[in-house]
Image 1 (cartoon, rainbow, N blue to C red):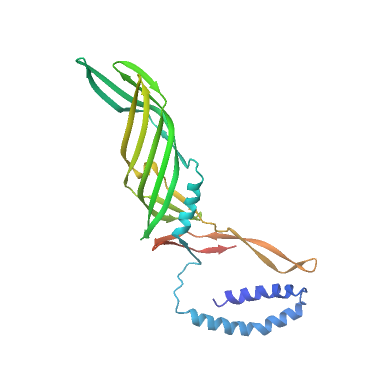
Image 2 (cartoon, rainbow, N blue to C red):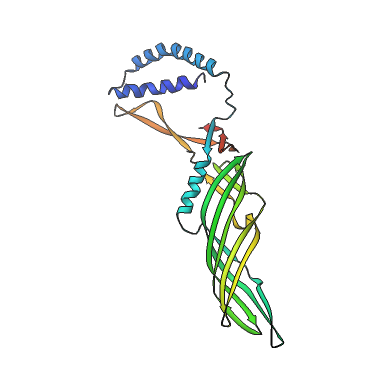
Length: 279
């Protein structure tokens, strides 16, 4: 506090003089600085005394992100109405089986998934609560895609390409973490959610309905989510005593390096803490 405030005020002095339309002579500037220096020191001392009882922590930068910001970000993704991720189905045997007796003859039917690709669209993402670095979210996903199936009924093979519809609406808990790249990562905690799958296959002259509520690990359908935070990596500052064409101040760019991002989510907000190095 002792030097930073004084430096900020002194850096602002040339701008206030520029606003009047003229640059001050060097001697006048030195006289003004000499006059203001003790007054700034006294003001700085009183500010230090006033803030001495406040625990500011060791971090240079502290940012609070409300849960509404996260909802707005994912709300914008949901509003796009496009596929947010793609799921590739692996070959799976026996997704549907049926055994019947016809005139005393046993007839077995079965259906296998050969391949498929399903587009998943995020429909809703809300944040009911944040407690102890855990974000609880209400997520709704909807997907559809064409798959390739094959099967046999009474020894007669068949193939089809029906549309498979998927739906999920459940509570998912995410653990919060940060890193040096200036991002917040939300990792789904281990849990089981219910994925609803529905399709109708036309084979052998019949419509074969398939509907299942499938318990599935949340990490199989919801990946880790990354939230970028717009932290600038550089800052422009005037070069001391440098002017162009008599009036324009010359600037140079200084890079800003951020330390490890420390995250804590609680009581409806995420607090971000980090240190800065300017060079």
